[in-house]
Length: 139
Image 1 (tube, rainbow, N blue to C red):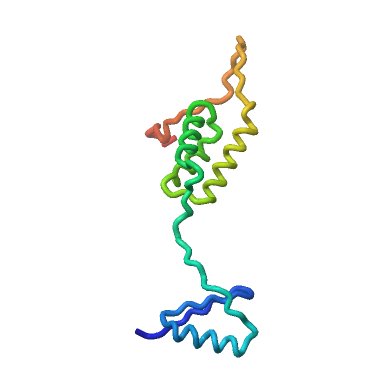
Image 2: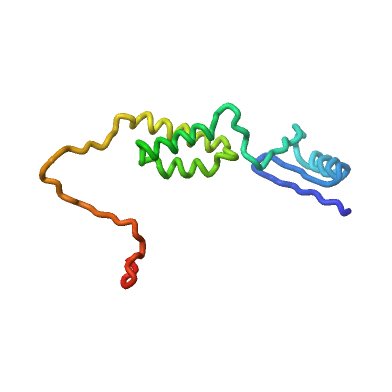
């Protein structure tokens, strides 16, 4: 197996990665002779998966959002649908989004649609969910 050493620089930080501890020691010694530097600590291994969400019952909250969007809050359909995609492996980012949606719901809880009884009912808009149903125009 051949020796290889990766040197990653970012501003004033250096990350060394190698498959040989002897080579790692030699590279550190060479850099220390030529530059004023300290070997502070080992790098922690990071998982590519999101952090576990034991403190927050993510799936339960997203389920409640799904119920709310079906029954009373159609304005959060998109948000609830996007959050549902990550219920099996939520990260802290998803937790923050859930909190943001909950704050939005709290801030708009008194907003409502009001339908008034009137004899002068005029249809202002019409929508049909039949996409490309007309064979001639595909509209």
